[in-house]
Image 1 (cartoon, helix red, strand yellow):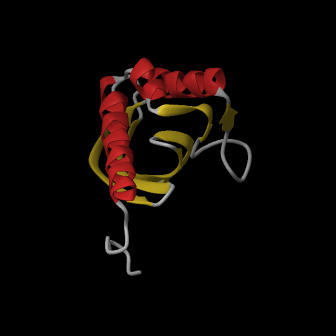
Image 2 (cartoon, rainbow, N blue to C red):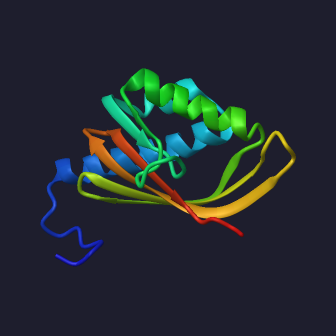
Length: 138
């Protein structure tokens, strides 16, 4: 089946696809509203967040709801005016992709504007894993 080909999908498959896209729409809206509760409402009970930066090859890893919540809150603390613009979402079965442009100012006044993406794994309609990647400007 070619990407985007919906032939052969059941009504349940189509409904799940739509639910997951709606979750990604709510998720980016919550990011732009700096709404940690709204973000967590999009996350599965057993969830993880792999940040784009950190000491390890896979960034900083936050596992479990409380750790993910703290990781998300830390992003807002590090970039109080953060916004994710030009959001585009795609869902492929139990995987998802969001592309965006991050714009924000760090507390020291450093302005950041970079493109990035998130890879998602879903558990039902909710996000089980958010794995972030973004460009690094030099």
